[in-house]
Amino acid sequence: MIKANYPVNKLKEIQTPFYYYDLDVLRSTLQEINEQTANLNFQVHYAMKANVNPSVLKTIMEAGLGADCVSGGEVQAAIDAGIPASKVVFAGVGKADWEINLGLDNDIFCFNVESIPELEVINELAGAKNKKASVALRINPNVSAHTHHYITTGLNENKFGINMSELDKVTDLIKTLPNIHLVGIHFHIGSQITDMSSFQALCVRINELQEYFENRGIKLKHINVGGGLGINYEHPNHFPIPDFESYFKVFSHHLSLHDDQTLHFELGRSVVAQCGSLISKVLYVKEGTSKKFAILDAGFTELIRPALYQAYHRIENLSSDLPEEKYDVVGPICESSDTFAKDYSMNGTKRGDIIALRSAGAYGEIMASQYNLRKLPKAYTSDELK
View 1 (cartoon, rainbow, N blue to C red):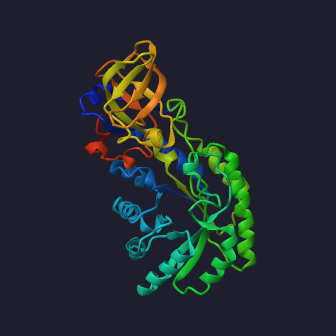
View 2: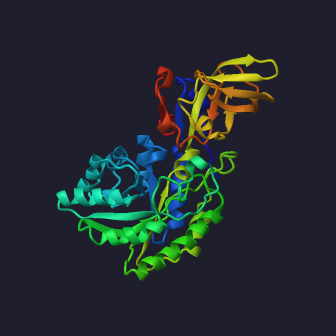
């Protein structure tokens, strides 16, 4: 079993806080993805919003994944990383004209379109370039992902996508847009999904929609089911690689894919989360009235997920083998929400100890801020520190 490796002596020499990426874990994850999708008409696009560290992107490109982008900056980063434009999909509810033009100029694979006004703008911009834009309609299947309400995206009340009640209007409109080529349909029901029944429900809805489009004489070459597969934040050592086998089997068994259709996935968190850790140092251990505070030099400026989503990250003291004690693990930011965990059991802790906040490879470094005029964290990889 591949496990994250921490070269503790070398980590101690680096100014904290910083991100550490174990590229061996990432390579094993990518190998598992490729093995589970081998000999299937599946194409995996890495969701760039999870992490765009150059070393991470290079490793993902070398594994042959495409890119799922939600901004012009991500489209450019994917192309700069060597990911072929023919494997780049571009989603997002608010694509600016320059971002659409960037996609058109690079002949990306597909725009995942989220509204009627967007369709009209893409048609206009493509026409100005004498091009035909390939698009997939992002449809809200009204399937609940049973996850945090901030990261549920497939319901009718979300800002994302086109509701099924609008499909007649949208498909009629497309027939009048000469610079639009409808190649497929796209879905994304949410994030950090570990209940496979949510994906089964999505398959049922897609099968119904396939019939709808066939009845309207529309042939779809591509079905994009988005991403959303969750990871095990509680036990990253025991489950360093998500259950890709069960995930891909859901779609193989429950989705009625035609022989000439390609099934696309947009996986982000499940690709990179477990390879990354935020490494921090203990500044002080403060004795409260009834509890202890382990005050770190990392805060929500480096890892905002606990403050924003009340998310759990396993916390490990890499310097200590003392018996466990309970701490409130907090950062230095002048906000009460700058707390990583309360009443958390970890090895006895003292000033100067090195702390790893695990499973931080997704939505960690990429969401860092300079609030309180703090410096953005640097990042190092296992390859660099060998």
